[in-house]
Image (tube, rainbow, N blue to C red; front, top):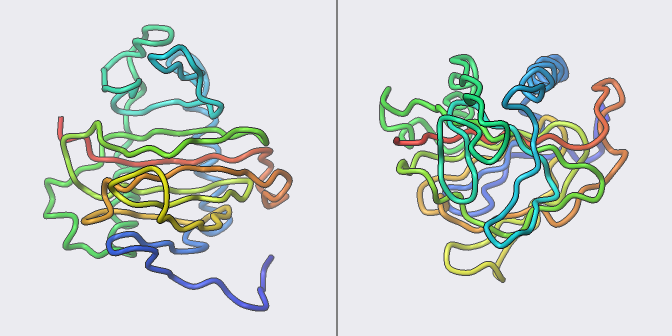
Amino acid sequence: MDAELFPRERTEVAPGAVHLPGWLDAPAQSELLEACRAWARPPAGLRTVRTPGGGTMTARQVCLGWHWYPYAYARTVVDGDGTPVKPFPEWLGDLGRRAVRDTVGADMLRGPETAYDIALINFYEADARMGMHRDSDEKSDAPVVSLSLGDTCVFRFGNTETRSRPYTDVELRSGDLFVFGGPARLAHHGVPKVQPGTAPPELGLTGRLNITLRVSGL
């Protein structure tokens, strides 16, 4: 809604982990959505991720810059159509660096060498979930940047030691930013619930998109 009775504020969920509601305004959300739709088209488009144990992730995914598959990176879609991964655009890296500056601070960028070069874009339909996991396949400890579009979700942010408690549940809405780095960089996190039908109508999206930006260090 345009005006909330109790406006949502910047929250430090844990040391090094910050939730900034409404960081992307409506035009920026629409522009990012159109880019995601282009990236999702084949070749190297949206795919179902299969785990080594034979299971499948319920959220579908497309990658930019480096292709992630459980649990490594490649330059081609090795677990899909085998084509080269789509390039990571410079403007998306600029967006990631600005997100870090606006949340956890420029000190975590460690100078110009912190160049975001990976995007994992997950599409959640109403029944999709993401189990508790850590983003630990990168060689860089630069902060992870997470942007939300579409339906609201419950984002569960935990601890670095275990997939269980203690954790904090955060409501992420369309346009929200969540950044975690420093002592929170390897915290377990997941999405136990998506709230269908909660996307801004003007966005024209059914479901939720999560754009996660990382520095590979590769």
